[in-house]
Image (cartoon, rainbow, N blue to C red; front, side, top):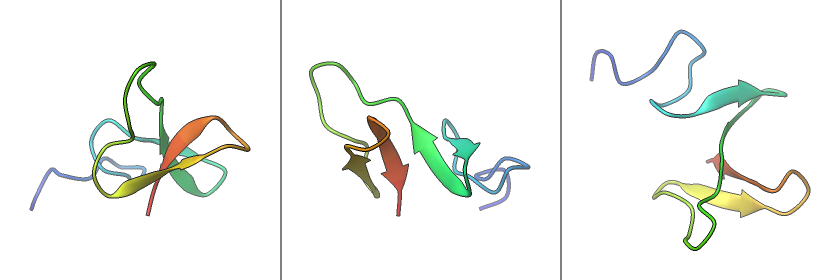
Length: 47
């Protein structure tokens, strides 16, 4: 799976933030597969 992870170590589309890989949650949707919603930061966190 070369290229699936950016230099941050997070999957494509995710951002490294406080040692977690986060992505903005869609306004009317759920988090992408493999991630869960974190109410504390209002974002999806890759698990």
